[in-house]
Figure 1 (cartoon, rainbow, N blue to C red):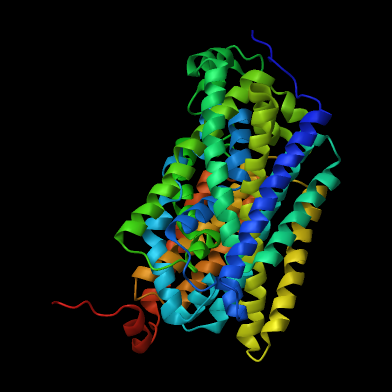
Figure 2 (cartoon, rainbow, N blue to C red):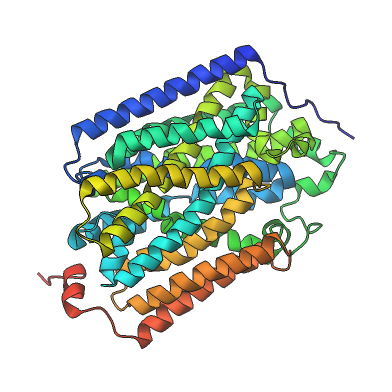
Length: 524
């Protein structure tokens, strides 16, 4: 039987200094680009602070979209799940990254910008509210987004904090507080335009580093044949690690995604709906310049090159290599556990240079997604609730309120992550992604194409999806009475049935609005 090749390396002062310098440079470039972008398109109103002047290029939008989509889950948590369960974890961690965010570009890029312009809206939530002529729906959507994005933000902070632990050995408190302060600073400095430019740089950087890390780790360890042979002889579970379906694992709870056909078949649905339905993804298109055929394909190509194969390799192969190298030792390190697999492996196969690049990439992945979500959460309150119901509120008041809310929405996940962190990022964040995707795939993207959709169908979809996510998550994570794959089918099918069924049975939006959003095509 093959024993682990290495243990988790102890923090090294020289390595720590190098990595810290690298991250500081990354953040300095991010903040500088954000400041330049904001100065170039200085916001003249609160609406422009939230969406800019809608002239951001397709290349910048594509890179920012990559940063929004490739979160701490994709860059760190996915490696952790493959490290924990073996080849079968790739269904949920990496294989579907090849499809990844491309459906969002196909289905939502043009329509999001088009609808927000026609409706005069500056947030995804406001677009939904005006699409269905309903303040009540806009408020419910804002509250639902707050819940799901809060859950998702916990995972981002854990990813950022975990990597600081790997290189410094500091307490979880200091690892997390540093991450929190940085995010708040560059969000308040940049606004939408600044955040978009910062995220664009980070998206390009992390995509390139992910590809380098994945390829180098495979070469360094001797290829997939060496990985398979080593995992087969692993002392703990051995041959189970190289199976594409772990039938030895329970078919209820999170492990259903790896242990049954029902769970495995649910994974492409999860990836498709979350790619298209994530509000922090779709919102990247709000400030985009109008697309022509050439710029559309630039958008598609850049997204695939940065968020397709490189991230699949980074997440999937690196998790297997980490299990080969470290055995189960990383699972014993609390509260980080298996989510230490990627940073630990980077140091093992590439020393300080690769570890520095990886940490910079992970920090970019976690904090870019976190910043995008916190920005939306702040706007959900200021624009989609306060301004909606109190339109006389001044822009300066809303701006100050937004700064405070950003800090509040960062402190809440900080407290949760510090005191009761999720065991594995990919599972915890996966549950939030399932709820977001199932709801907003219908309420946002399907609503761009189906005129007959009504506010009552959308309302039923949002309420059902939110309640079922809470109830189902409890049954999956705590009671272990429901499989995670089964929950996905319940969410998607239930949301779809209610969205279409209730819409058919209720009064459609006004003819004036429909004519504005869905103009008749000319026969000429």
